[in-house]
Image 1 (cartoon, rainbow, N blue to C red):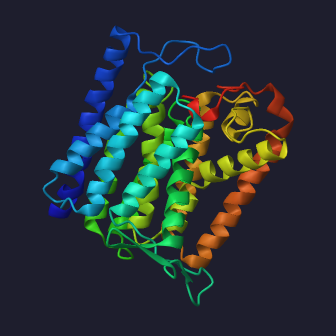
Image 2 (tube, one colour):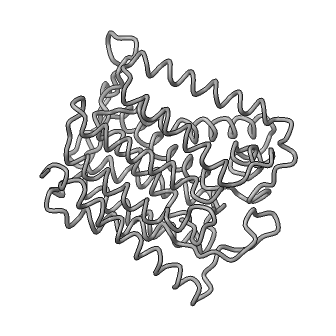
Image 3 (cartoon, rainbow, N blue to C red):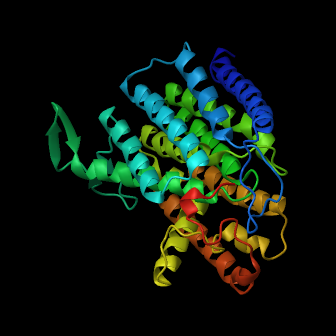
Length: 362
């Protein structure tokens, strides 16, 4: 029972705080007219409050920082300062529409903050057995600290990639938040499993899940508040870091977040092939393509939830060979969906068609 309280208490506190903060931000947005801008080519045609990511980040940081079962070491301080940077920049971006270059710069800074706090990846396990792929062969000494060159580059690519994948997924009510919640819960069960057995990581994961769920109560269709840049970037950041913390279980994160990762990768490739900037919005994302089939926002969102949940559960129960099979299966499933929706692409309405995708909101 005591073990249950260790996880249940911070989850419920984070949930309650997130609910309160999200509701307060909705009222604050209405009072001061801080709504997501209405545009002709957006899905949403009504005024909806912004800055929901603030509710998630603040509730998460408060519960994590004051949890008596967590010791705030260098890595956790890295999470704190990185989250604050994401919050401040996210609010700035929602108000001023920062360029994609500024967003990339901040994302890289966040990754560098975590590396300087001690986050590292020394190797990637070989799923076929045998020797692992070492990332700590080349090291640099900076300010008395040793950094792995390849490991640091991997961390930067991983964190920046997931932050943008979750940002681009933020196109329908509850979509990015729900996928983030599934990812957080997956990381929680992985953390407390005999394979990893890291209770502190489990506490952080469940606090993260509670902060998302409180916001999601107001963000699921029909949304009363949007998460904004701070929310989507925070989701991607935390999921990327938790995957590395949990014994480097990158494969698990790839499966539970395989949908947004493969979707973002496919869209980037298509834009580059068409001679367009990879950061320009269009109707290529799978959630838009499903809308073109006359699916409702709720149906599309629940369908994507199911995909992420199925592969997330399967990833926890599978060994290395099984994860390879699962990822191939996920790739084929998403590929078939793209092929099946290709004829309807032209009728799908982009939320931010023609505008920089980095600046698009829910």
